[in-house]
Image 1: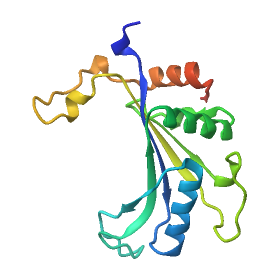
Image 2: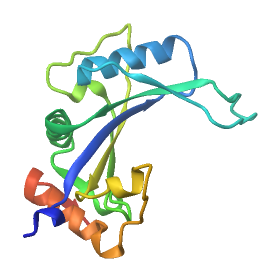
Image 3: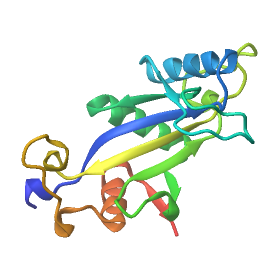
Length: 169
């Protein structure tokens, strides 16, 4: 197969949405740092929602982005927690994969800490083929042709081959 047609993992983003600033957000950041071994970044609200008491610029959660070997290692651990099974609706039309983990203590070596509590997290995997820089670069930006974009079927096949993932229809 042409090496430019091979899908690959661009990045894995792990997100914990807390919905408020303060002590819970600090605890969520601590959990992410324990699980990934990386410093987390706060996610900031972009809109106002009076019903939920959210103001623009208010910290709502935290995230960590992993790339390369770190991303692959974390993804294998996260999929083991899900018993290497994901429903078909976890794949979006661009071929990306998203799933949730209900409790951080499911990870190997993590113990429940009563001071921290229980935190779940969302894991988002971005799959792309080489050549996507064309859409991001500053000069001579171009669109990626439909034939070079990743379909959900190709993403499922990639995940089955590389991670032994079982897709539930």
